[in-house]
Length: 551
Image (tube, rainbow, N blue to C red):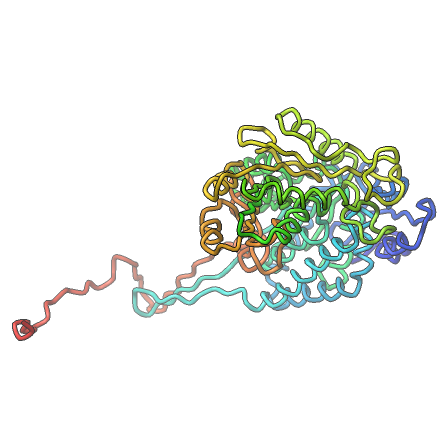
């Protein structure tokens, strides 16, 4: 990658997270000038517009300034991706896989720095950030070998002297839009299989994680990726993101892959649908977790607690409706609330061991408080949660100075019923709605009653219940005696109903989303042969057998 930025920007971009761990003065931390990366060049916004990225755990800590990309910038990136496509598609798949393997090794080399940078930019705990980076590494290592397994088939023809083949072909230019809660894992879920199949990409970074995206794009180029194969643009969803989606109508995009809200996903699906362009939509969830009387309650409480409050509830797979059988409701709730009341919260970089950190940004905090109000207006009873954490209003487990960041109390709502709005609406934050089930059938009904179908879970030691749950639930993913969260690089990730359009990320299944089947008919006979028309009919003849001897 050729650069026009000062050398020190490229030298220190990966180290700013580590310096944060060793510095108690945010004003003394380095501030990076970020750039778009278009055709391998570091570029600014065409109109000079910029925005800043700040640390939600330490709001006076500004990580850097980034281009507020214009329509012209987005179109420049699309043009670069379009120009790079023929050469990259013609690159042998094993060679593409080797470059992807190089990315994985570079991520391993810089894992600590990237982890620290993710924690500084979005406030996740260091342990969770490390998991996100490891997911990106696993994805690279998995798809490195898939470069040697981009299989088609040889198919027997119904005519003589003819061969039939199938091949996977790349789609073209892919628009990539991901949310900021998993800023390392999710873009790699999308772009690694995309480029492995021979596509090129225009990647719109999350507005709240531009520096991490910039660092990751740098690593991709250092791995040997040719200029123009992945182009990075920064900006707002309503700006650069919308320009990228609008380009589908202009015939400049052959694929959109989006992770975010269901409302935005539906809009993107409409644009892609009217242009017959493929869309991968990984959307929201109101993920159910059912607890049955046969379950190990200690294990179930641990799983429900993590599902609800890990990542401050800012996962699409976070627990939404906790459905508890009435016979164990009181016992479960006593154990569950004891854990909730002792929840440790704070800046993981300065307070190791906290369960969760700040909200991703002020916007997410405002949206969360709006959703909490919706729960109360629905008629649910709040048994824990007191709004934004301040030094005058904080739970016993809060660590540090609350005035520095954007922190929220954990919320628990009970007496929730199926007719309430809060039963059906996703709440993106540390809150759980609790529902009582009469029996297994009622629990399964409640688990299927929301408009979403991303993740799900059940805690039971009755194997028949486990079987009936996994066959009866309408969801893309199910945990049995495990939480609603968690993904592995070699399993399909995605949902049904309001949680997605049926496409999947991760594993071999994602290849279907970034390639199309090409059937080839190779005529070797030297003459025209027409299937179904020139096939010789085989006459049915009755066998000459004396069946009387079998009587």
